[in-house]
Amino acid sequence: MSTSFSSRTGARFRAFISAIAVSVIAVSGASICASKVQAAEEEHAVEISIKDHKFEPDSLKLPVGKPIKITVKNLDATPEEFESYELGFEKIIAGNSSAVIRVKPLKPGTYMFFGEFHQDTALGHIVAE
Amino acid sequence: MLAALVLVFREVLEAGLIIGVVLAASRGVIGRGGAVSLGVLAGIAGSAVVAFFAAGISNAFDGRGHEIFIAAILLFAVVMLAWHVVWMAQHAREMTQQLKQLGNDVTAGRRSLFALGAAVAIAVMREGSEVVLFMTGIVMGGTETALQLLLGSAIGLALGAAVSMVLYFGLAAIPLKRMFSVTGVLVTLLAAGLAASAVAQLSSAGLLNVLDTPVWDTSWLLSEKSWVGQILHILIGYMAKPTGMQLIAYGITAGTIFLLGFIVRTPATRPAVSSQ
Image 1 (cartoon, rainbow over the protein chains, first blue to last red):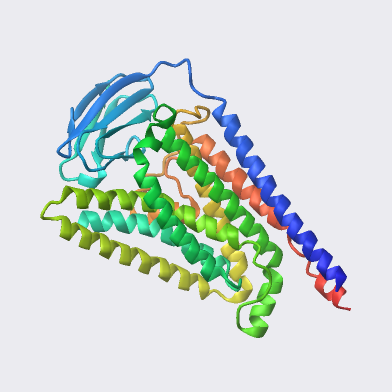
Image 2 (tube, helix red, strand yellow; image 1 turned 135 degrees about the vertical axis):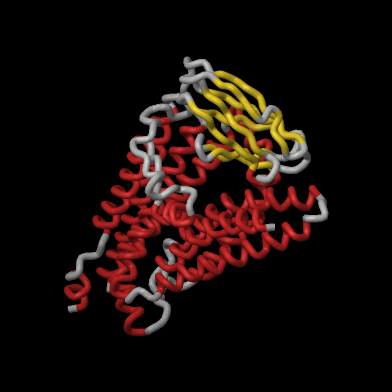
């Protein structure tokens, strides 16, 4: 009886230690990554606003090979989700507020983006050259 | 209406599939229903809170707040799922035996119930906050189509829940002998996929710039935005364009959980010896 009890306790202990080990690995991994914060590379900053569920401007020319920082201002009272399949971002912007989207350096081409909550009107694209 | 239906369906499905897998993986643990229900409720409450503070969260850390927040809760979910898998690996044998003999829930421990509830709460909170924001937008917009949109959302919610239940009953139909190994592998891959998603979030916040270019692109074969691609993305973390760092995160997470599960697994001979 006591053997099974102690082995059960040991098992719990091992499960606990395992969980700790996994979290340590996850956290240390995350902090190693976070330490690589990009600082020196200058970002190309642009602004887009959303009004009446439309983008202004809805067409942007952006430089190739530079990280991009897009500030999206939502002037509508309702939230919108700023999304692009090709550029791989997806971000909710609450009503009457703004959000920042960071895009990796682009290759030449055209990239579509849209507002997921109003896909019939909120459409736009980026031309990288 | 269709757009609303599809949007809500996607979000509900994402949370629902995770719940389905986790429920199947914890078959036989007494109190799992309560833990999962509590997790869902906590997740819904959390969604409302996150939705309310959406602007504040998003603008924190120079506009990186949302990504950091999502990455943090994803990593927490990964740890919870890992804990659950390891715990199940340890108890699968006795639970299978008891389930076979008694045909009902086993009385053996509830250690991993907290982990289970927490993982469910996170899944619901992450997808739910989006649905809450979308719905608030509809109500605030107050257009004549609002009712239609809400109807679409309701149908989307019901459909998402239905598909998740189909998955759960499909998994529950697996013979008991294999069940825990199948669900263990599923939850492990699920956790690995979430870890890769967390990496993607940190990368898009510009916090992680090593190995951040796609290693391959299988969009032509299976797009991540297609239905099958999306379901596989949720369940096993399928990525059409994985970056090196995402692959590493996926591999390390899956490897760690498999290894830990292997280490703690009760040897087959031990119960026989101790009973003598």
